[in-house]
Image (cartoon, rainbow, N blue to C red):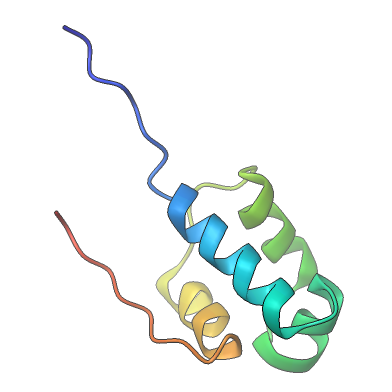
Amino acid sequence: MATKKTDPLEELRKQVRELIYQNYKSIDDFCLNSSGVPKSTISRLLSGERTEFRFDTLQKIANGLDKKLTIRLD
């Protein structure tokens, strides 16, 4: 039986998108005022276009959202 492939970043995408729109007027507002991460990087994360990120980039996103980045294996 084939195992269904899952996108390991899907939950992260969902959380980041929700937090940005809960706390900022737009992705531009988040990028300009909080994260220090270029809008193009955030856009590629949210669209699924980019699937690999450096830890420090994810940490900047988390810091900009005033969240703690936690990585775990289940």
